[in-house]
Amino acid sequence: MADTEKTYKCLNPAGIQPATETYALAPRLDALDGKEIYFSICGEPDITIPLEKRLKTDYPNVTWKIKKTYGTTPMPLSDEEMRTCDGVIQGVAW
Image 1 (spheres, rainbow, N blue to C red):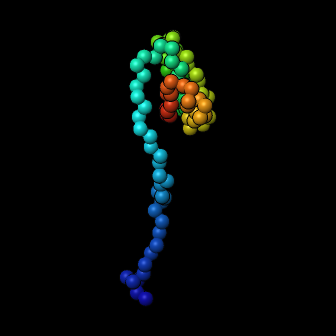
Image 2 (spheres, rainbow, N blue to C red):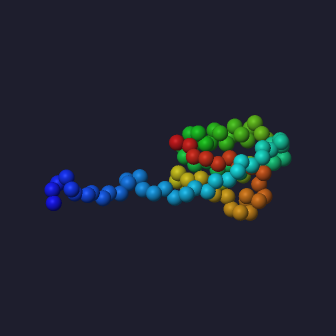
């Protein structure tokens, strides 16, 4: 068999991405006063700590619940937390 007839098989180094479940956007809150909002942002504390303090100062009538994060993944809310809260600020900051 000549070199021009060889067939090489290889895998894509990016791999096969699993399907991502998507959800429709939730309706916006009419007001923040008296609402319970979870705050779950992981990453650089240089960003998240001042943001948390600013939100608490700017919106004192909001019940802020902090969801502790570990590593680079925001902690998911439990089913009970999702049912009882009015809003969530969740993300990753580098």
